[in-house]
Length: 114
Length: 114
Image 1 (cartoon, rainbow over the protein chains, first blue to last red):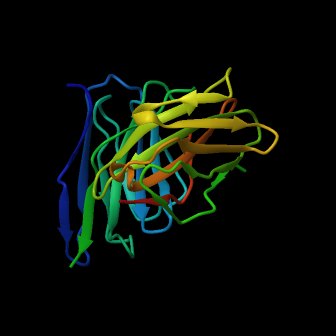
Image 2 (image 1 turned 90 degrees about the vertical axis):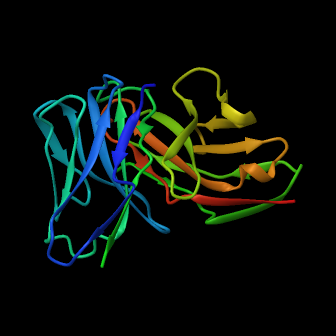
């Protein structure tokens, strides 16, 4: 079945560690997105990529990094510079960077700092 | 600037009664509008969207929404609520002309009371 796979579902990070969240899609979509979800704040855009080897910062990119070496993969690294990383992270994709298509979402990764 | 407002954090409705979840938006151009539903610890599921044409759009699970350009609103409705409709609902907007990002509201928690 086509879709977006995020792994792991739960992730625990110690203070000062970098961690990488995986996002893979087999929908052949050009654009991919990373969102952070905190209670009462909705979804906030971290990074997005419109095409392979290109990505742009979203509203809350500080303390995060991404890469887009393959069309189907868009991993997110939460660095030690991110002061409050505990949150639910959602990856999404759309067929094209613009237009009326809805975004397709993965099942999310819940990151907790211990 | 693009933005979405969901004025109600929480909506309670009795099973079998009609439900409405409110959404207003702001974009510089013409909007693409979307509704999503989220169950606990899961990703967002697409419900419906407005692209162009008929102002009343019908979506999954009996939900519908009405686009009102003069009031810049896109309220989600269902004629008869089910307990299983209890979830978190997000409205999102994308600018038709410039939009390579989705802007999400802060979400409305819907509780259907048996």
